[in-house]
Amino acid sequence: MNPILFSFGKIKITYYGLMYAISFLLGIEIAKKYGEKKGISPETIENYAFIAMISGLIGGRTYYVLFNLDYYLTYPGDILAVWKGGMAIHGGILGGIIGTCIYGYFKKINPLLLGDCAATPLLLGQAIGRIGNLMNGEIYGVPTFTPLKYIFTLKPRFYEWFNHYNTLSVMEKGKFKELVPWGLVFPNSSPAGTEFPNLPLHPAMLYELVLNLMGVLFLWFFLRKKNYKTGTLWCSYIIIYSIIRIFVSFFRAEDLMFYGFRAPHVISIILILISSLFIYKLNKKN
Image 1: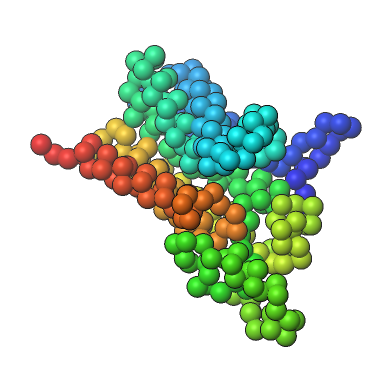
Image 2 (image 1 turned 120 degrees about the vertical axis):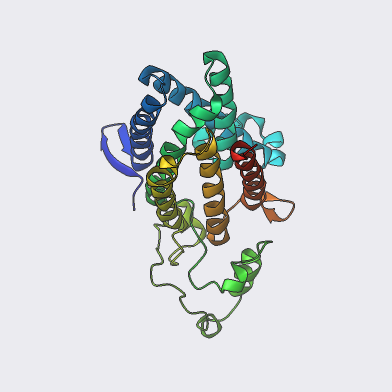
């Protein structure tokens, strides 16, 4: 696994950048196809895509900074240093929602309709983007020999166990067997390999990729064809991704924290409740 796809002198093309470029371009075409049936021009969709992308990036970075506020208050110069990492998908979703509402207001278009146009492309883009995460060795899981009772916990206990594991003898470590055969060993130069050198890890990014693609199929080939009210598709995307993230976060070694709980779990549950209520209100018969 290497983050660099190919290079020409000092110009480097990364898998991560390529995957998100593909996601963006493919997503626009899918949104155009949906928008055309709803009376939205291709030009409007293209402009909306750029607004949603920018607001999503701002939201993703802001979310990450707020959950690591102590560090950024100490090093405020790093707030804009996005090349050092630090983006959060839930922040991106919230930023995208704000950008959608602002764009809809100025264009006099129902933001719920814009959200419906973006729902499937967003989930597909997140799936494709995980290929870039795989090549970068990020969004990685815990070692595959981690007992399940330390994975499926509301308050993460993995590092507590792993620190104890590192104090054990070779013979004592041997009693912890591989739970799955598809663990990946990442290069020591990657974030995953730096933290867990030469250890097979749960490919959490691939778990999310597969689940996201399943969500895409459900949204596009089933839910899109149902006669639900405008906004249902958008809210359904939020619910589907939140459920996926709750599951995948159990396996992730690194996650933002909120008062001892995984932040993605807390935010996902809130988004599921709000989106479910919204769908109920939208489709409730008088």
